[in-house]
Length: 488
Image 1 (cartoon, helix red, strand yellow):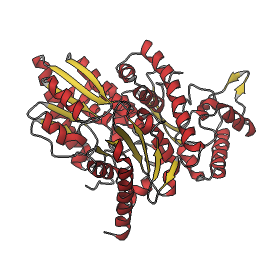
Image 2: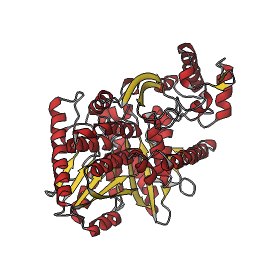
Image 3: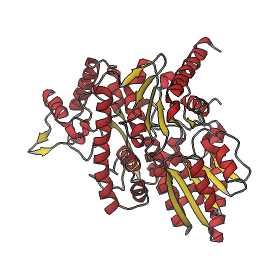
Image 4: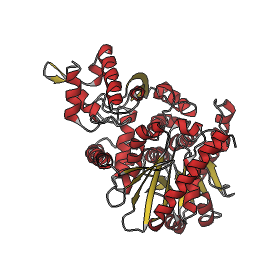
């Protein structure tokens, strides 16, 4: 399915119409007093989507329960089917497993609010709201939380204050792929809702993590997208880097934050980062990924990680990846006391874990293996499957510039399965790469399950088939890229 470069008003109207059908069905079940179960993914987008739907249901007086899922498979589908509730809602998941859910939940009242490519036709009893149905790109133009927001807004226009969570989820899914890291297309309509309602401000600046809440050197060290060798994760080296540039980290014995730097200092810092990246064998223009749209949530307290939509998304991702997903949803639904304190501690553990794994991959030759068409990180025995996805994402910011996607895997504790994560680049997508198709096709050959987006996808397969799976993925990537280049 091809996607339009410009999103028409008609496409947005069609997506809105689908969201209205879902909203009407939800309100009908609420009116009957029915119990509603919501299932969502544990990444930042999934938690944002769960928070949006949870808040909308709470305001509507619904009887509901939220459940956060690390993945969908036969076991999870069987558990959901056994619940036999009047209405089941999936947010940020479901479309990629329509065949499985169609079997297990046949004839049931089901709503899917998702942005992943549908794997099959939607059963008659299902209401599916998905941008792909209307040729809107679910990888770049709207996320799962954005779809959930459309449904929540259709339930009650007062839910416009939840637009900010749709932005947080889209940023968590790295949908800021437009020039200057802007959110575009349908996401832009959500941004406009948030700005008009007074909950959001947008400006262009450096995108350091902790730009409002951390001293400059800490904000620089916490920046991992892109990953800057010998600076990301290294506070002491970041401090020395700034001092060598003549940028004073303190003024009157008080640490300076990014917002305290002058325009000249910011330009000098950006130029130095570009030179540093070149010295490490990377493309200097990668530094310009650090400049872009800053989304500030005006109703959140200054000096908290919720003030910046990007920091908010990282906090949610941390809670999901560190088995604390419930904290993330509670924060999305309004908890600003104990849960926020706990989540702030979790993000420190998450950051340390990610840095440890990145060092493990890069410090020793051979842990990152280059094959003919892909890079492979074999994480079994060390990498934790819960964080394989963010590790893969961070590594991909440097590796995919070299013209190949990256595949990483880790064993799933207590099971004879491995979790696989894959990432590509926009340049590779333009040449014909579609990792979602590759993960689905390759995993099915080994009785596994896989899928996702063209630029980011995943799979689960039996551990005994890992080597054959990798060979298959390598071959499929080669065929896709050669097919595009040869015009077939």
